[in-house]
Amino acid sequence: MRRHHDDEVHEDEIHEHDRGLSHDLPVLARRRMIRLMAGVGAGLVPLVGCTADDTSSSAAADSPSASSASAAGSAECATVPEETAGPYPGDGSNGVNVLKESGVVRGDITRSFGDSAGGTAEGVPLTFTLTVVDAASGCGTPKRGAAVYVWHCDREGGYSLYTEGVADENYLRGVQETDERGQVTFTSVFPGCYTGRWPHIHFEVYGSLADATTATAITSTSQLALPKDVCDTVYATEGYESSVDNLGRLSLESDSVFRDGHDQQLAVVKGSVAEGYTATLTIAV
Image (cartoon, rainbow, N blue to C red; front, top):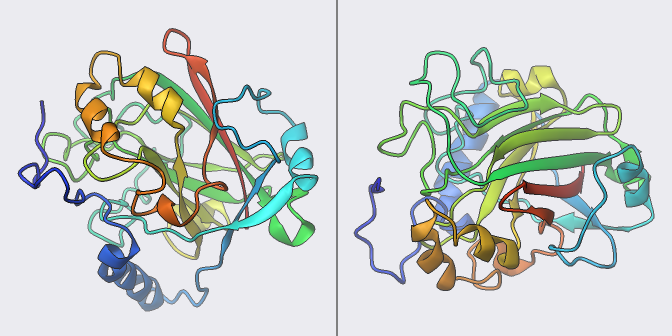
């Protein structure tokens, strides 16, 4: 099994991947400085999530459809905390910039592309859909033509481009432009749980695909949380052995990122190990 550069930390220490906002302030400062130096005048704005009254993350959900955004308009529209991108964003603010590479605009992020080693991330299939809507309209209007960049760890907790053993890969990263429903859908694998962080998926929202692929004018940065019951089921399968103990030491309430409130970041997930899972989350900018 791959070992992270900080595998020798004590069990009660927070993993270096994401120690929360206070730990990553230097990273965020570098991100802002880089964007300012690039001539970007727009600052970060709050990210808003729209959820229905029943926020049970494992409840059955309808397949993504044109009704998703309109349904959000009748649900509560609440601000989601702006979150750290962590040390491994791959957007040029902390080392390598995958956003400018040909091939990063894609729906299937399970495979590496371009000049990478060409590997494929293994794990339980996960397809997740983010619906971006306009906060000014009360979350009732889809944001067509925006762009979303997503990235997450593999089933062993490693991040492509950074973690030893997968530094030559760029899988589990991708960008898409939102469609007329304000949606982007990515085909991936269920991420593992590494020491000190609740299972999650990072995302950045951009005003346009051009902004995303030039890594400029970022609108918002946040994280999607995955529900415990589904995580428990997935982590009982082959390849996720280390995630069982890691998750057992955590809760959403103790996680360094989600402990200040996770209702607007907890995805609705359905499916099975055999058939794969789907996750959905509506966000507003």
